[in-house]
Image: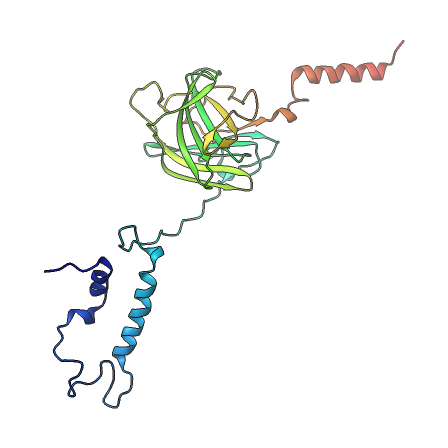
Length: 282
């Protein structure tokens, strides 16, 4: 008994004509040439062999073979990333926008949405960066001791979901990652992602229960070889109040560049200067 090379085994399995026993010698005058009719014209058999030969030669190309010589299927086509619908904000999901007034998921400096799906919470994040975007769940408004979910763009062009825990001002990656159904894309110099996370989790220092209300910390920044570095701004934005996963709101937070004339002090200063100019000097 002998063993066939894996490629020969595959050829035998794929070609039904090789399953039949050979009943005649190729030199037997009483046997017609394989694949030809009575008058030597090509028949169906030759067509079958030609089509099989073409298939086999393509299927068994080295690029389709594993290191052991066995064929493996090519990767299925990847579905395009579904765009984030901001029209659902405040209706079927909660949203937080940070940036220019009127911005959306593709133009805000930072965008986050959340919604409950069964026993999970689905998050969508997007930021104007080529590195990473993250959200932290905090019991206060300060960075430190926070459960963080981040989407990181690596050098291969992929966007992966990571779990971190803030130790002071430093984010430590945690091996236990509660994220599932991950999606991510890097387009137009933006990192965008979508993932689910369980609403309830076993009590643990690095994981929080999302059915409770938390302050949300928002951050984004560059990455080096798939590892996050310091965030883009010195004081990342944080929600003004605790956010409940059960309440769908559409919250807008103006970026620093658009906060100049919105603070009470600046408004009071403008009024005083206007009054001074109108009254003139004595």
